Image (cartoon, rainbow, N blue to C red):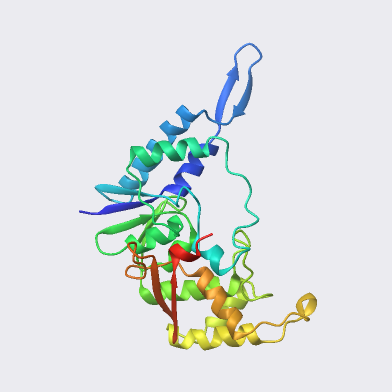
Length: 263
């Protein structure tokens, strides 16, 4: 039996912002408005069931970020997601309803992305349009693209290193300054596995910057921090009973407690 791991954060947000049309039959004018909570509930149910069915799953697990929003990445990098705007007005109400409706799963200190990654594996398909999910080996259904793919471990690592180099302006970390998509692609071009990509990533970080970034210097330690920020946790890397996180960035062993450092 295949289980759909639903990105609840994405689904809830979409249900909050899909606008409704209202027609003034006297004037013939059409106006749009944001949904009421009840309308958003209906939309959310439709989205979740559609994602599950499109992914070819029988059952589903609805995954959200912790309602208290304590995240371990803020403990690693205080500026993480500091520039995010306010959520839609009905978001909290819809989230509370969805948590009860589907007996939602979340892990203390982890974003929904990480919980999806931890739960991934045999018999599961992640349902999310988030590009970060490409760093998780296994099956992925993208509602935005409307298709499923199977991501190999090497492909997942390649995308992880791409994200490390490019950073994520939405989440507030810069990656390798001055390195865009083409620079990331060129940096990783010569390798085929993590042991070959990581030295090239470090060299790219340490390379002198040009143009408006010429006074900026980055080190191997900067590369390691950016790799940790862009790493979505995978099965076996998080112990929900203790909060311990363990994984490797090439030869570097990363260990911390997500419960203790969550902010």
